[in-house]
Image (cartoon, rainbow, N blue to C red):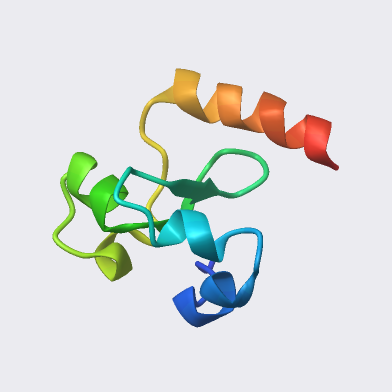
Length: 77
């Protein structure tokens, strides 16, 4: 089972924090693209969630999106 990263840990990362606080949607997925680790309020709303916490840890439903995220993730390792 995948456990979402605590938001406090994500927001402490200086590379992520400015984006997480932005007005535009920002997502952070597992490296394989299977689950959403974090979404800021705009991203959570676009995905139909009321809060960021509600969105965290949810599976990526669209298989094409998961595959694309997995391909991008593989280039970052």
